[in-house]
Image (tube, rainbow, N blue to C red):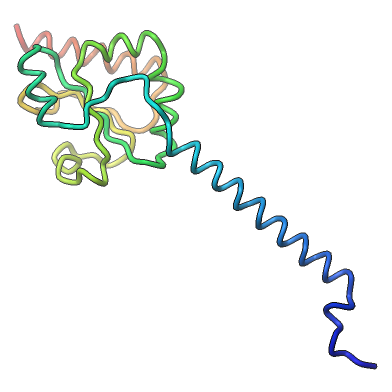
Length: 160
């Protein structure tokens, strides 16, 4: 018996190889779809990307700064944008701030300054850049709304 072509002559091994290949292709397609979903979300907020400019605007307008530290591909950052920040009450509350969004990995100095250890991280700061309040990770609508209201109360009390 000739055993040189046993792999190609064995239909069971061919089916197994084909199934493996199809599963690998499907896994790759799913991974690409997930990456696309989590990396390209358009925000409903017109975030600035300039911290110094936001601090200057804060001093001029008398509004506190809302810093949003995130990163491309951050699952919970996308979830905040698509589930929480899109809510009318949240958009309205953010409108009372000078919103600035920074990529934590491209702004390492700012991330270190504000002690960002998890993403997303939201920091309320005054016009001098002093951190007044912070939350990180995914926040429910209710918790994020309370955080934003608390930040406005802190800054209002600080001004008096």
